[in-house]
Image 1 (tube, rainbow, N blue to C red):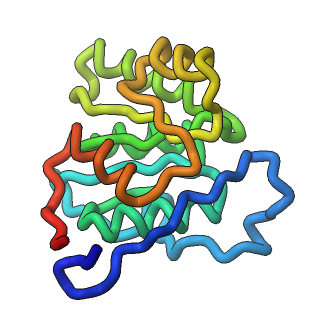
Image 2: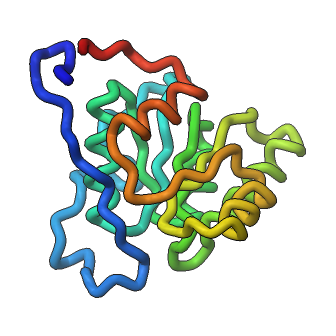
Length: 174
């Protein structure tokens, strides 16, 4: 499938790595970042996807997928960074890894939903994006307040279809 600019869409699959993988951030090139942000930095009030992911390889692949979809993004490397970013500028959608150092994705989702219930944040979808695929993992994600549970590895077209349920995505040329 071609993009609107004539480039081929990737047949890439999101790399399956857990947080305890032996790959260290210093040995793997990560995405270019500006503080806790990455990708095309959104203007204030502009819609964007917040990717919450601690693994540098998964960050690069997911951010590239989101950029190919025409989405502006921000990156948080753990749950606390995600909370801080959401308080500054609420995202249109959050893609949340589950297993991260410090505050994990489940606790972060619970805290985001609590802030939304208190009226401190607007409602936005939170989608788990994790290697955890057991029925109990899905149940834990939903119980924590996530709207969907996506499992890695995830290819570009599957991710696009799932995000299209929640966001108005630009059309791709076939």
